[in-house]
Amino acid sequence: MIRKCLFPAAGYGTRFLPATKAIPKEMLPVLTKPLLQYGVEEAISAGCNTMAIVTGRGKRAIEDHFDRSYELENQIDGTAKESLMREIKGIVDDYTFSYTRQVEMKGLGHAILTGQTLIGDEPFAVILADDLCDNDTKSVLTQMTELHEKHPDCCIVAIEEVPKEDTNKYGVISGTEISNNIFKVNDMVEKPDPKDAPSNLAIIGRYILIPEIFEVIKTTKPGKGGEIQITDALLTLAKEDKVLAYKFDGQRFDCGSVDGFVEATNYFYQKGK
Image 1: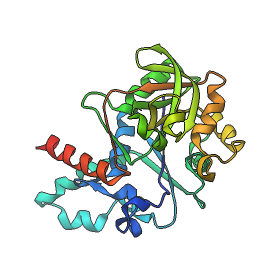
Image 2: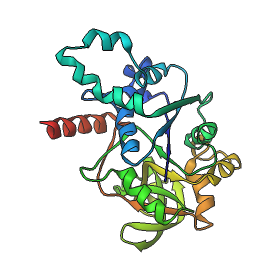
Image 3: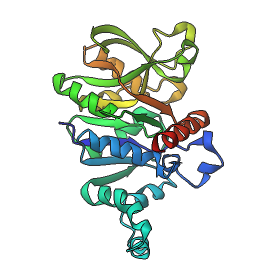
């Protein structure tokens, strides 16, 4: 069982400036709920009870959100607005949140390594909050945890098909399909040019990682952009047949881009009508 979910949340969110000058990008709301809360709710749906969040300077709003607000609760107690706080209050009361800071922005691999102190020596999930996923029956992370139960010695990455011209925005895998929508990964490339991409199967912000990943990251040299890429670390384990890619069932929105953020907002607005 996957108990802990790691949320890398130290990035600057420069694509949303000036909005993210003082507001963490993970706290940007889709309708009335911040992106990070959607991710936390997905982790809870998959059975996680501990949220490990890697933050940075200027991210205190994240800790404040996942905390009790007695003044606000008292102000709206007994009013029609009391129900609006019930969901987040339940999350705060029933689940554990822990935090550590990523002092330098050295890539996703480095952010995950920074979270080792919160995870310990056990398999864990990773959710990137700006990849917002939706499925009416079974969340993407739930699908992945069920797969992990069958392959407990493997890391699992979520993938989806993207247009070939967009491969330079993602980590891209190639592999052998061993069963329906499940691939044994034999190669992974971070943000390849379309002409060099091994496929159009792109990794999105959902991972299940085995604890060996931490030691691998420590010996992984900086790659694309001078950053420590989780794709490069996973490739090391893929060469040992320890990485599976899963083409998930559901819809994913790239809320790290303005277009994707607007698309997600419209989607959830229509869904809630």
